[in-house]
Every structure is written in structure tokens, then in C-alpha cells.
Image (cartoon, rainbow, N blue to C red):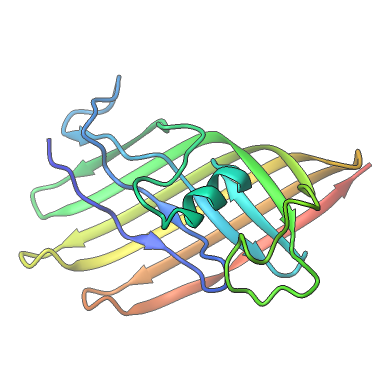
Length: 199
């Protein structure tokens, strides 16, 4: 089974990262000529609402990993997502994933300098809200003989969250990116983020 490392969708000021890395394991009931896709993970800024999101990880574990020099694999709460990818004879790779994952939203510090998600939040405040997110991600890549190629990825999710002070929220995020064969970002849709307070 071929194992590749996929590209990552990243944002400055906190790194919204969509990781779709193939694993060496074998998934049950995946289509013929398909391979596993690694778990989904995102740590991202929500500047409109003054928040930082941690998807499929916790702030505590993420910041401990970052403080340790980001050695080894990132800390994940769920190690496998129901996902697959197809590889064609032309070298085209397409992957899809859907999973329900833990989500934490933490308030940005008043004096945040947008250096990192850990430095710009404080464990003294506690999270703003937590809950589960219905996550969908997809990617399409075409690799050339030199190992480089164009790549497109998107990540979106809807979450129902409970605030630490008892409020209820609906949270929506969508992001996409297109990278050409020379590694240049040709299209980077600014993340669409919406936070709605529920009655």
C-alpha cells in the first residue's frame, strides 16, 4: 500500500490546518484500489468572534505538544476518520472524509499578538464553548513524476456547542485552498465562520 503525505491547508495567525495524510493501516469496507486517509485535525483563529478553535484535540494537549517542540505526531483525540482515497493511473488522488469530532473554542486574550494559538489564549480563562462537530473534508491532487503537483482541499463543519456559562451555540466553518504545481497558492478562500446563539 502506497503511503503519501498530503498537503496541509494553513492560515497565518494561528494555522488552520487540515491534515489528510494516508496511513499504513487497512480500513474496513473501503472501495477497491482505495487507501486509508489519516485523521482530521484543525487549530484555527476566529478573529471575527475573538476565538481560537481546537478540532479533534484539546488546548491542553496541543499546547503541551507545542511546548515540547512539536516532536512526534500531533495529539489527536480520535485516531481514525471514516475516509478513503482513490488513486488513478494518471496519478490523480482524491480523498473524502466525514467524522464527528470534539471541538473547543477558547477566547483570544485581550492583548493577543496573533503569534500562536497557545500564546494568544490562557488556560486561566477556560474555554468559551465545547461540543461535537460534523466535519467534512475533501482533497484532489495530481502528482507529476517529480513528486510535485497541483492540489485542492476543502474543510467544513457544523457544530452544536455548549458554553461554559450555559449558553448554546451553532458554529459553522468552511475553508478551501488551491495550490499549483510550483507550490504557489492560486486560490485561498478566506474562512467563512459563523457563530449563532441559540435560544
